[in-house]
Amino acid sequence: MVRRPVAWIVAVVLFVEALFIAALNWFLGIVVDRQDMSLAGLDPDMMSLSSKIGGVLFGLYFAFCGLVALLVALRGRRPAGFGRVLLISCAVVHGLLGAFTWGLVGWPAFLFMMVVLGFIVLLLMTYDAEEGPVAQEPEDSRPGNGGSPVTPGPAPTTP
Image (cartoon, rainbow, N blue to C red):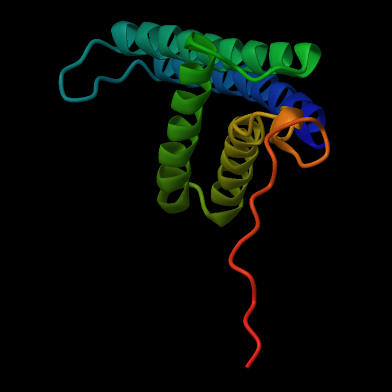
């Protein structure tokens, strides 16, 4: 089956992405702090601090999504409740990030975001189909098992 490998891939990618996003925003906060320039009258220290806080929060969000995918991989069960909602929101975020990266960064970043989006959707969709026993008719109603007798249809007529 592809369920567990996909869950493992999603978990690893989301953990790496969490570290990358947090580190990138932290770096951008340092750059803003060292430039000591104002953007439309905003305080440079506040912009630096908000970039660092936003990066840490966004990194924690991706890490928490990665934790849900890791639990899915370890347990072998579909995500339920809040974990499912979290993975759906993560898929939506990757779709939006893909749209932004197409214009701002380029097609390789867009392709990466779409691949991650595809893996998250695959993780959610492969666990949607409930596997269970095939529906069978009860044994008592089959002919020859002591069930109700089979009533024959009309007899064929010959000319």
